[in-house]
Length: 120
Image (cartoon, rainbow, N blue to C red; front, side, top):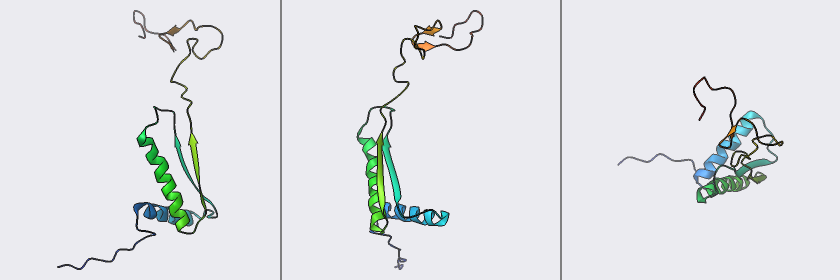
């Protein structure tokens, strides 16, 4: 029978406590201010939000709580961006004055196609 080596338990022993501990050590090594630690989480415009999107927010909130358990002041910055510039291209292309002469299938063609070929 082999004797198990002692493990150093960080915080409450969760992986998120270990992550917060590593983050604190990195910030100390870099000499950054430790009076307020900010954690960010957010949703982007690519695709419809789904249950998997919640994971990022939950992990970020967990890190915030772990930092506070270590005695540091922290805040969670949550953002959401619903603007996807390429989700719908207007019929006029990027211009505001009438349709583009080079507009085909909702996409403005840049450059010239070689003779006898078409870009689409």
